[in-house]
Image 1 (cartoon, rainbow, N blue to C red):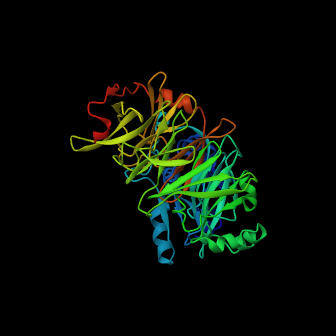
Image 2 (image 1 turned 90 degrees about the vertical axis):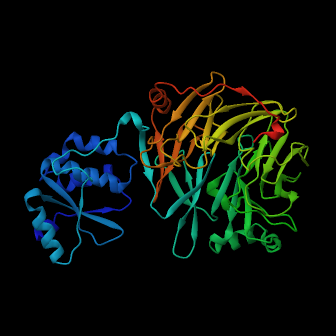
Image 3 (image 1 turned 180 degrees about the vertical axis):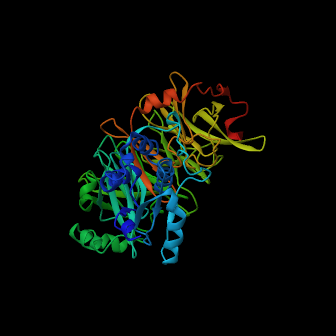
Amino acid sequence: MGDLKSKEIEIPQDSDLKDTLEECKKAWGNEYPFLNKVVFEELAENYTGEYFQDELDAFGQELTTFGYALYDISNSEDDITLVLVAEPGCKSFEKTWKKQGGLCKAYKQQGRKFGENARRFNPADKTPCSNAYIYPSDVSICSVAGDYAFGYMKTRKKRMGIAVDLKVNPPDTFKTKRVVYSCAYSQKTGLYAAFCDISDADSSIALALLILGKSSEMEDSPDDKIIAIGKNPKEMERWQIVKAPTGSAFPPATAKLYWFDVKLYFGYGEKVFMIQADRSGIYRCTALMNGKSTFGNVHFIQTGDKTIYLNNVSFLATIKNGTLKNHPFGALHSNDMLRGISSGKNSLMYCRTIARNGKLTPDLIDVNMVTGAYRRRLLKNMDHWAYPSYFNAEWVAICTSSGGVSSKSYDLMQFWNPATDRFLRLKIGAFGKNNLVQIQILSTGEIIIVVANRSEYQIRRPTGFWDFLEKSNVPPLKNEDWQPGSVPFTELR
């Protein structure tokens, strides 16, 4: 038993199979040369991005084909202590170790016998990636905008703000003075707008506000939420701070932000705000609607004629030339009506939940907001939380606010090319057991994918992403054809 202890390997809980395999080779490679076989490298590649627990179970299972069992003998929550035990001595080892008061866990796959190979994923079902950067369980990513991701790290007393430079490989994660819950990036101005809740931040916020001459403004604010606007997330303490207008309060910091030209819009319930710079370059906030703080974000779409449409469960309105007016269609639809895209001068697209045969399904609606003329089509393989979003000049992303995990019957996302009417499915399982958080195109043109599971977030760099989609969409998805509206748009249910 003492000889076994001398050969143990300490592995951090936030490691992955690739790194673990390298550590095992360094420590055990001479005594156990089978560890250098390519089968283990292939296994690590096949399990890239899976839960570390699942990776270790697969590693342990594969080791049984060489007559060895992999054990964790650690009592720590921070590290894993690995040892290898030859099969004839496994039961004796477990009995002796437990008798001495130790804990041991054998890594193996359920349903597999000793000596059987570990299960493999079909490579054609998983999005290939060059690497997957895995964050520890105390890190949460709240928003992705431009070339950065924003979130926080939990500590015992507070949340500490973090941001991630996605252009760097591996991603460069750094601390921020504020916790950013929602962020938007303007390609036109190069500006980020960040919704922050400074109650989570440390005391240096007060000093930063004092340096910027904003401390008196914050004293007048009815809550502790701010909008910070600037260009470089690594210099967030220098960004301009925007307060809520006098007599009003900002909505929850998770409210979605929208840049249209050089103005920023957001809202919650029956509160709607606009932020723009004055002639001196100072950003100021105006309340366009200052009603009740009822439930639900306000969604905005700007159509080709520069009219902004916005809605919540209780209203449908327009903004033109800085003036907000109720729309004649009235509050007819769900909160997600305008979670969509512009489709023309006066038209927009969004998804509408329709009940069919006891199931909730999404219809893609294309409606002229002046005449009320519309067309509709059923979206197959998407859940009723679906909504369209801009992806690039060629493709529209059909996303879902459920993260694509409401059922294994639905896709994580679909890509639709309006010019050719082609659909490409990103199927469940494309990221293993992980949920899709966001797919982002960086300023470099590189695609970054953020996924999450029950305990951790990951940032992945896919390789051959479009080739993977093409190959995994045989036969291709054929959604139903567009159908003209059969009832007046104001009566659509």
